[in-house]
Image (tube, rainbow, N blue to C red):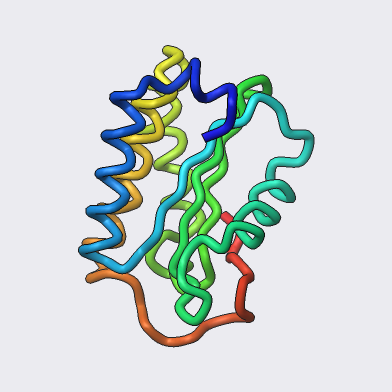
Length: 145
């Protein structure tokens, strides 16, 4: 997590989030990463660049998800790998942000917002039976959400 997150997300919340995303990955083969940053000018560009640089998800399956919260702009983005576009479509990602994460974030509960967001993404993936296996899209390219 970014430096700003150290003050916004408690140690206990980080542990809960880590355990949750590890459980989701074991059950579904989907890798979820969460990031809180103090400032970003272009959230979409930042999320895509970070997603590709870190390599979230398996390259051949495009099964990664990145949840980014920008503190000063009060913005959230869920970046989804191409292999999950049908599992976590744009409208579902928008609902997760608006209905699940935003209420917690408005209260300043960043850790809880990330946990609930990751859990909601995990629920969609579990309901779909896990990450699809076929190769879709170009390696390392996420599908924007």
